[in-house]
Image (tube, rainbow, N blue to C red; front, side):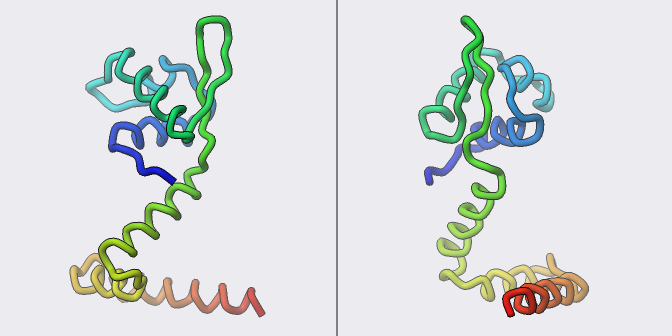
Amino acid sequence: MKTLTKAEEQIMQVLWKIGPSFVKDIIDEMPEPKPHYNTVSTLVKILVDKGFASFKAYGKSHQYHALVSKEEYSHKTVKNLVSGYFEGSFSNMVSFFVKEKDMSVADLEQLLQQIKDSKNQVK
């Protein structure tokens, strides 16, 4: 799966949030300052070319929708992050966040509980 630029990801976030959308709808959901119509139109065409979105034509208008789910993209992005920065180890990633004080003991306990729960579901 290809990666997205920040601008492309911003468009995808809107498509994931509100579903099938015309360019005007996408712009309405974006933060100020709003990008120009032609900029958003170009970005959604790039997303179509990359295989992240598709469209349904209504005459000259196009309604765009996501082909890749947010979960699928998030999963791939996190795996790339762990692979690229933490030697492929989720343990190294968690350790990094603990050292940076971005993860509390309560967060760690919750993570451990989720791991235990998922192992119990497999049995």
